[in-house]
Image (cartoon, rainbow, N blue to C red):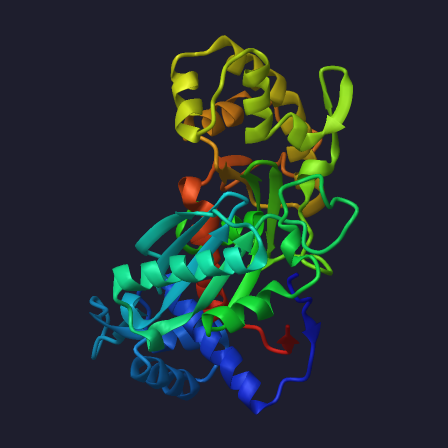
Length: 390
């Protein structure tokens, strides 16, 4: 399971690390920025910023990006991220396959791969994860000392809970720490998260949530999960199981049912199968939508009510800047759900002068959880964490 964070004291070394991450995050957000601008925005002295910039240049994490024109005197040097300064491996473990990706420091995809998961016991899963990691390293030819770490993403919930057996969680990890297990297997620092949380971070690093600090991501896998980001940090809960929204009761056609039974990829497939239509892939769902298959359109019409209820719950509980829909669902179906949603006026999100729409489609596509696994590692490199330990 994921480890809960707790507050600890901040010694000088931890404070230096915090300041370094803060400067690096300023550079990332700005794209190109000078020392004086960083100092004004961070509260650090110009000398402190200069020292951190020198360290980041020496480590290859940033590079000079020319000088800013249109200023009096000597134009200040601008700094930006060096994409090749660091890399992260992301691995998504699904019940039937393992996906892996390599991202550079800017969140750009460098390599990706997929392996069938032929053996679902612990040795079999581990063997396939290592094989997938080795394949993206081979493809990208990234030096080992430039890999920050690996993100491992899998369906939740983690550990034995009252939801065990109701979803697609991997029970082989119920009684061990996946993070420690995979750190031993891969030989690098590892972050473990569920697929919804990872997808939320993928959108922040290189997707629709760039520039946002507080938002929610509704993840369509076999079931339905929620990744919530508050002030740039994931809301994970005590044991990493926050966001199991697929199990909340919602109204649908005069009855109350668990959300993911009427709003998920698996629920679409079951609805189609009951009418004798077999669709086992996102491509098949997209073709059915293009053909305006009546059974699919019936499902979409029924899904509007529970989606509206779920969004109102998310908005009033979390007050996000927006709710993003994404995951293993075709864009055409996500767009239809967004367009058809009858969003309630009785929501804190119903306010004038909104910057973002209340519902958006994610930009990371069907690989979002895999990309998110690597994005978790990059996100940690940019996120100041003074006084916090795992």
